[in-house]
Image 1 (tube, rainbow, N blue to C red):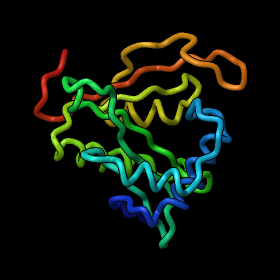
Image 2: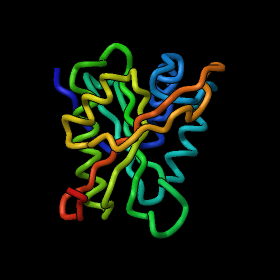
Image 3: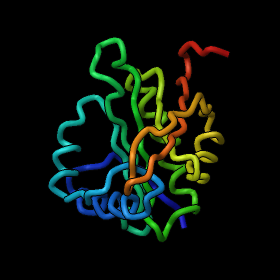
Image 4: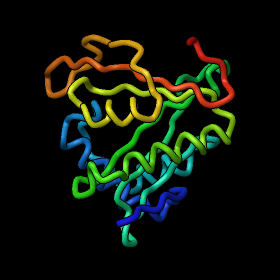
Length: 169
């Protein structure tokens, strides 16, 4: 089955909230513990400014989403997007995450972003492999970065410079 990736709209808020809540429940993708409502997702989508929000659609159903958020408030960081990719349980490991992240990279580059970054739990092997396969590099570990369900968790930092931008290599 093929997947189509398109810009997210407020009409996708229910599906995005459902998929996000699956990620929250799974405890391997986010420090968030409170489920998201469709209203919260709508508010987020409406306030994104220059940032990118995408959904993956298969057979007419939203099966994943990706978006960027500001990395930091200071103007010097305006071209850095912190990204998230979530895929519904039933469609994980089927190419949906790759399709979303590939399109996210292109759309962010077109909007003038020079870098994408994220934080990934070390045991989230699928996300780490996806990022690595699309040219992200692991640049460090924040040890004991936050608590999740009372346990300290580390996160791995990933980054990718977008085409035409300087790299450190």
